[in-house]
Amino acid sequence: MISARQIPEEEPDFPAPTANDYISPAPRVSVQAFCSTAETAAAAQAAGDDRRLAKVHLTVKMGGIAAAIETYHTQPTPNVIILETEANNDILAGLDELATVCDPGTRVVVIGGANDVAPYRELVRRGVNDYVIGPVGPLDVVRSICSLFSASEAIAVGRIIAVVGAKGGVGASTVAHNVAWAIARDLALDSVVIDLDLAFGTASLDYNKDPVQGIANAVFSPDRPDTALIERLMAKCTDRLSLLAAPATLERVYDLGEQAFDAIFDTLRMTTPCIVLDVPHQWSGWARRALVSADDILIVAEPDLANLRNAKNMLSLLKAARPNDHAPLYCLNQVGMPKRPEIDAKGFAKTIESKPIASIPFDPKLFGTAANNGQMIAEISARHRTTDLFLQIAHRMTGRSEIKKPRRSFLSPILRKLRA
Image (cartoon, rainbow, N blue to C red; front, side, top):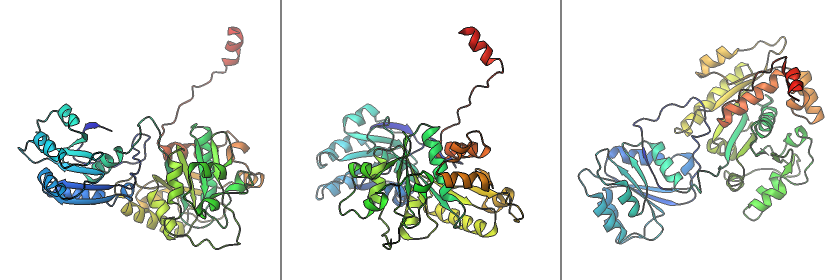
């Protein structure tokens, strides 16, 4: 993709994800950056630690375009070259000389200054794929590299939403399943729920499905899972919602490697706009990786001290591991349980330094009926307050603004009959 854009000096703090800020991860490629300033070199080095460049082999060198030309006289060129222009240098002449030593198919990103006079059209004619006006930050470098490998801006690349409990038994799976239902039904996004609790997962029960195959078949497949295999393993819940169910059996021990689910997630990203991960409450290598690599994270907590401590620890770690992403969001569940002392939303917000996006009330009859019937809350009571809360969470997690429905007048039925 070829684009020119003005990059702001500082990336603003984003309070919540939006539909237009998504950056799809880059594939397994090699990138070499030739910088002229220490600031740009530091930004490129920091970008290499971003989750979206986890598969990218990034090397940062100094010297600008002159160093690149000297290097590629004796070495093959990588998949992507990032060049920072130097003041008063003729970038067009440098690109012409670089072309003599550059392998076909190599993509070039130029970081220029505000005073550069090279016409953008001339840069494009010389094979420049992206032009960014400095100074740049780590997220600018990430966005530029990833945009080179986006097939088309019109094609939605799958967005992963991870839902996890701050403590066991807080109802994170129930929240994940109902939010996924709202995303598929009310937001009309094709979605997949992946139950990652292989031993004790409840997604198949909540959706009233009994699939013979599921996520375990893909994880333990001797071959890399492709789209055809994933499609065969998914159970259809609605027209827009599918399920990769957990086996929920104890015949084997699920000691999985850190990258056990990477190939499955990558395959689903290519075909499904929204992937909801039901992450169990455990701290293993693969669970941490699933959270860190997700596009958006929702932590579900009950209003007590242990949940407050765990939620704060998880938020702090995930913020540090994802410096260029939105901060994870959290919600409170089972609020208002009779005779239980609770920490209210203000207490959580004061300690965690952010407000919960929702407080879901304790309603054992409603949730118990839904669980026993294998139904979602919206199926039990479409106009219940909790149904609206799950829809609000779906809007926040997907970055889609809520569509306000027109207010109906009590005269509407009469007017409709008169028009007929």
